[in-house]
Amino acid sequence: MSAATTNLNIDERPGNFLGLIVAAATTIYLGILVARDAAGKAVPASDTPGLRVMGRAEHGATAAEVVQVKRGIFRYNNSATNALTAASVGKLCVVEDDNTVASTSTNKIVAGRVVEVDSDGVWVDTADIPISALPADTTTNGAAAGAADLAALKTESEAAGDTLRATIAALSA
Image (cartoon, rainbow, N blue to C red; front, side, top):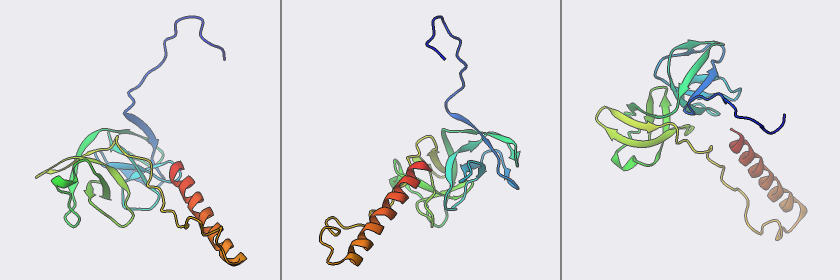
């Protein structure tokens, strides 16, 4: 390739649409929250470790088909158990299931940022999903330098390595 020496007609598509291949043995229904699994395949959003919400399904699709996913602001059901309130506006909400969002959940799969909470549900901005939450640092500043013996140094070094690996995994999700 080389630099352009003439005008170009570059293809374009809206930046708020994604095409994802649907995972095996999976059905995606129109309107649900769609997540990407560890293999990069589309699955219905759920409170399952390793998922990353991508947006709303623009049509139904089944295994190996491509589903169009739109990022934007959509209204989903509010959790009956961990309901979001007006105080939640501006905060992140998590997935309870493929059409319900909550203030908290077991695995804390982020659905997006709360834009509004009304009597019909929660308006969620699925385009405003930050990088996966980074893990807590389990090391103690200065512990390696102050280690009394090799075993203590090994323990602190392993903790630092675990934190680094988890951080890289979260950034790569």
